[in-house]
Length: 69
Image (cartoon, rainbow, N blue to C red; front, side, top):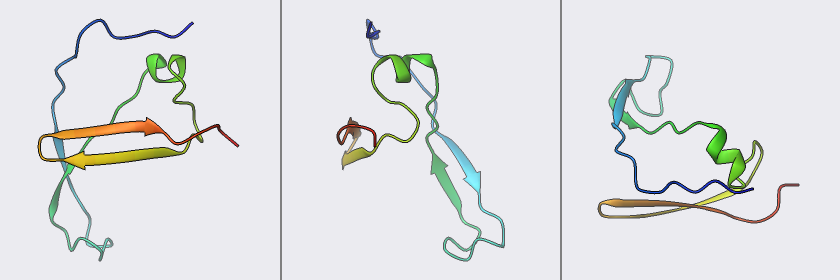
């Protein structure tokens, strides 16, 4: 049975400092979003699922891309 959040939950955007081994970002502070919980799996977001991430100013939408292989 799918579990749906009754109302949006406030979350805090954190930051991560990349190590000097990460030459891609050169040790800059980067925003990080980490989402976890049983409710993800209950709503079809299982490990290995392909996702589509759409971004616009002030909004990030994560959608399942299809069936898990």
